[in-house]
Length: 82
Image (cartoon, rainbow, N blue to C red; front, side):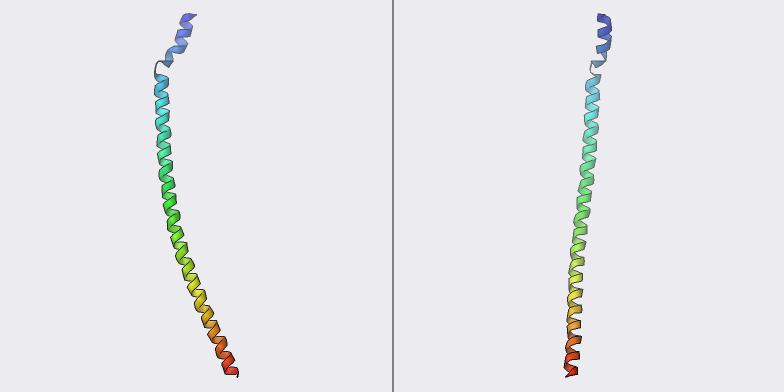
């Protein structure tokens, strides 16, 4: 019986520690890759935010220009009518 117990626990002579170490290294590698991926996504989002800000400014300028143009046309029509 003692031999059977010794045989069953014999595999824990350091192989479990090695397996645990390899798993930790694997998790660390995956963690680093995830951090790198999130950093790339963050940079892409910042770039898109800048583009949307520029687009918003362009749309505001276009709408102001069109408003001034429409006001000028209406003013010319009113002045011409009288």
